[in-house]
Picture (tube, rainbow, N blue to C red):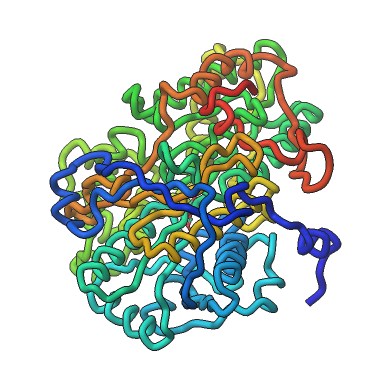
Length: 550
Ligand code: FBP
């Protein structure tokens, strides 16, 4: 396979590790933990893995570990750095004992249940070091929740002598990892399960998991593109660019990109929800900025829109929740043939309020809300073209204002959606190092016999050698939520906090960014080689959350 010069150069990059891994390791256990909410319910559901202590690795006396085999699974959407988690895991296992083996289950969790796997040898691993993508073993969104799946997984683990499974995934996949860990521990099957925090969305984080991997690289890629568009907008001075950014629920990606590029408008879903805003309120806010800029002769600009927006508009949220319950395993609905029949069926079953909201939506958007859910029961928001809907609504309103004489500008809009462009990018130095460290940490957690833990690497705004490695019990991150019409234990998603430093910074600057001509920042492409302030900066979000200046 032909390789680019960057690929060749990156293959030789040695990711940095926390200093503790240079020596032999001791495992320090803290005191018992609790889940973030619904403690009694979570404890009852996870009697064998609830309350375990937080683990921190420190320097210790040298130890030897018996030979072991480990299986690894990539789960859910791609995120830059997945290959480095696997190479860190591989190198960690080999350092513990050169006879250790690593198997990769193919195509996501279904590889475990369908017994599709390969042994990951150093030849294979070396081809994928520091590369983007999940193609080394592939990924998938199969949900691991049935006992028959757990049993099928146990069978193949026993056949291959696998001691532990590492699940690299987002909140839903790590919830599954926790359920699987509990099941195997209850059964005393001897198979351990360890999770790794992956998702570009950045919403799998807490005090112990400072960020999910992939967020850094993806935001840098999108911010480069936004900066380029802003330079174009500022040169041509004739287009408004409506840019939707991935991030199924939380607006972390959109906010981080705003902090990096300083657009004229940035919508934050969590604020929309907190202020109980309607779609019309959002349009009003956009109109104010467009009209104000037009009065100063600036008929151009940029608007960042989070992918998950639609689910955070309170009336829409209620509608989607009703649709989720209504459409879960609904054979009657699925047997209807035409869009019109489906629309009428849904309208007849909704509450009065939701029926009104549903009826008012552009037909295309209404239809998208009733399309298939992903295996975790989520609406596939990446398919909902909110940016086009907003352009349509804004254009209509401006045309009416023009007719009345209250708007004299020109409005010409272009829409963009950035998501897949960033999910498989070559990992930034931060993600390359962080992911490698997460994988390496997972190998030690396994050797120490741990299960139901997520690999944790903290202190991330400091240089890598000062990072703190260890494990966090997954039950600690859980609460009860309604999914597919029933209450389930799930990892609590971390949404943008309106009292958090990243949002506060944005709030303090947004008026200036909306109106001033020269506020745009052009971040440029990710740099892999060069001065540290250009190559090794973590995200603005992480810096602000750690009390650092940006
Ligand atoms: P994960 O939560 O699995 O990391 O996936 C995140 C994401 O990239 C979202 O931002 C987006 O809404 C979704 O995946 C798209 O899913 P798909 O890859 O199935 O199109």
